[in-house]
Length: 121
Image (cartoon, rainbow, N blue to C red):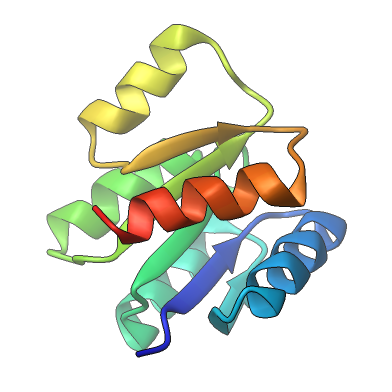
């Protein structure tokens, strides 16, 4: 079965980088969002298996999107991806339902390793 992925990042470059790495590894990218509002709408509409979620978006924080999606009962695995790597931020994300946290910059190998780990949880 294909793992269906929603990519959330305000940077087109990052969305493209993540999409290409995941598709090459056999993941199916079903949607992309550049801001929090569309991320929530798409997540609830598409019901993906996995969401890669940037923490700093133009309209809201990834942590708030995470809380909203968990409150809505979305079961998707969530891999937070952010340049913000403070321990307190990482712990807050995990406590609020993120399955893992990947710090930018990262290699394709690190992305795929983290993705595989999250999917297998």
